[in-house]
Length: 303
Image (cartoon, rainbow, N blue to C red; front, top):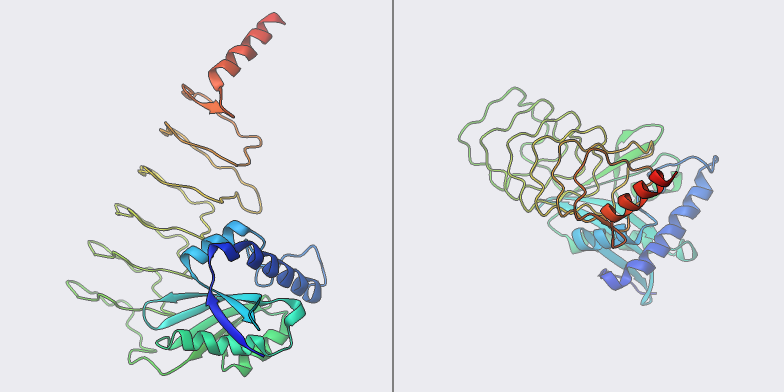
């Protein structure tokens, strides 16, 4: 028996997605009594999407799991700074489970990132076999609800751990390369500061305000921006890929926007409404919209 991990490549995307979908669907069948119920810790968003897999291969640490050189699963990791790591997803083909593959893969990932001293992950509260597995691997629960369990595994401790420095003020401080993990910054303010190359992941930024900021060449991925508002934003060269309108299918609203030269491709535009807009040069499937409207108005006049 030989269990190894290798960095996934784009050519692996379809096969990895196929295995992940089969694995998580089987988990849902096993643990969800109500099959119409959705548990995002069992069937995470985009788990059946090849495009989501491609994104994770390109932007995250995505490793394929090989059992005697045969592809049988994957593990996806996010690292923040030098010391913090998160296991976003791990899955083993149902036909290969029960062979100690998962425990060996956890060991291999820790060897792959020896500088990481704090690992965390989440799992569904319903998957009790996962609870036993992670505890066996040295993880401890940090948060429990009726929906999910959060786990952490520490290797050593920080000198600044568990200190309360609320209401402190910092000015003209050099804090480059600092790392923050499980820190409560609610209500904090950052102004006139250099935050270039900052990496923010798995954080709650709801009800936050971002004003007068330079976000050029930034990446925004795997985000929930529901009910957000954007005003006076320059979007030159921005790409929107694999977007959706959430579970409630709430529509987007564009007002007083300059969208000249915009391209919309392979999108669901059902019930999309465009009013009081300049459609000069706009085409749908290479057909000029102006000609379509002219033809429509001629037909109306005939009636």
